[in-house]
Length: 128
Image 1 (cartoon, rainbow, N blue to C red):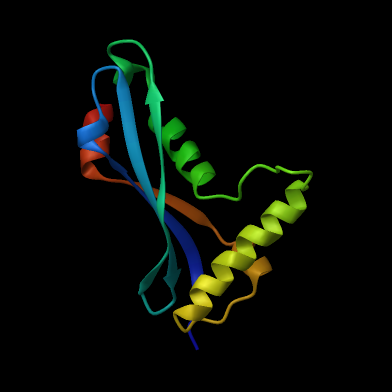
Image 2: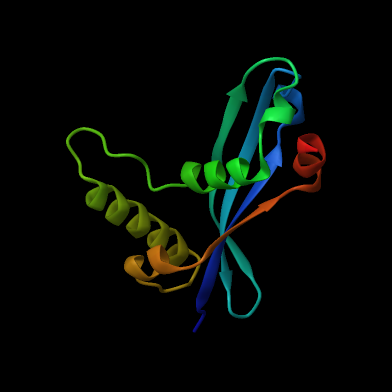
């Protein structure tokens, strides 16, 4: 049986959409298993930040890491839903994604796992 040990969001700079006034980042959420394998949970997330020329000097690595965790969910409530409902739906969806890949894990368990963020070398270089 595969055990999920933690979650990792990989953040990478979208070079084609980045300029001196704008930074675009893609984010991919993965579940890391005890046997060392990583399974993709979400690969369609990201964000763009805009500002004055020299934007990169205004963005801290910690801010990028925090935003990366935010964009992979859970989402903010909408249509009268509560934070709890949004979280439950998010973790249930991710548990289903893992189930389709042969990993049985409780949704509540996923929400309690450590969540690391790894910035690509390209993104780190752009920020410095």
